[in-house]
Image 1 (cartoon, rainbow, N blue to C red):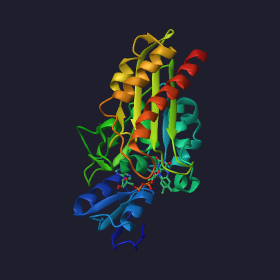
Image 2: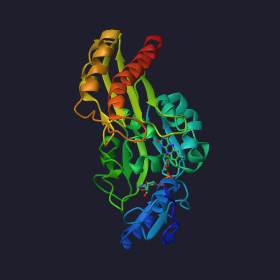
Image 3: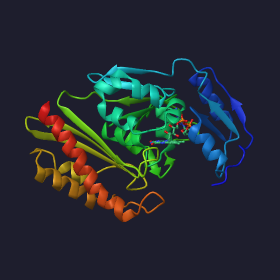
Image 4: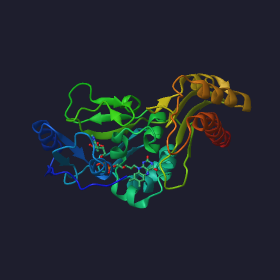
Length: 295
Ligand SMILES: Cc1cc2nc3c(=O)[nH]c(=O)nc-3n(C[C@H](O)[C@H](O)[C@H](O)COP(=O)(O)OP(=O)(O)OC[C@H]3O[C@@H](n4cnc5c(N)ncnc54)[C@H](O)[C@@H]3O)c2cc1C
């Protein structure tokens, strides 16, 4: 891939989210920027309609935070870097599923510059972070909206790297709901080499009730144009004990899910990815079940 120089653009640094919204609304072809890694990279690679105005959030105070708890829900601000979140004790201890997904991103440079929200808003189906957020049933809070301000993370993407966000939309926070005590999770992914983007991601979140599973969320990434919940695989676990049989049935249902249609690309063949959906869902469920047995 030949890298080109960046096309020319105006650079705006508003002092508040309101000003940022106004700047986006007043420029016909503007884009919001957080860390700039994905946006500037896409522009250098010759994106079809590069923005002529970039609205940077960097100078807006108070947007770099992680607040809340497992008992009451957690909020992550739009300038919170991946490294901030990875090193956060709250994320590590109270939302280990998200921590495991963040830790799977191996480039410290990328994690130091790149934001959690920037990663999510790219809309790639291989996002480790978005896979975890879908299994956590997270929402994205849109700035400047009175009504429909909450967008489920699971509904963000319409196709690979195409989100339903309007060019004027700014996500002002990720909101992750509270988790009950007996909730066990696991994250699994496959990569060619550790620094590479995942070729398959699976996040599971199990809500236990006695020895059985009351409810389950299974999110799969890089096996379809968008990250999806494997509903039949989830249903296979509801109201049953976690056993080798129920886990195998759930993994088989994920493999057979009509959404499971991975592509062949430079990272993997579609056939291999599909086979590995079954394997990764089983591994993730076994890991979560082992935690549930100890809890
Ligand atoms: C070498 C390398 C390795 C990587 N490895 C991984 C990996 O293993 N796993 C993984 O998941 N990712 C990986 N990534 C992706 C990386 O995590 C993202 O590029 C980064 O997090 C993007 O964040 P940013 O803050 O730089 O976003 P930006 O480039 O600033 O923005 C990205 C997009 O999101 C939009 N946007 C940003 N913030 C907002 C907001 N608040 N509201 C609305 N829209 C917004 C922008 O307009 C743009 O379209 C890798 C990237 C690189 C370059």
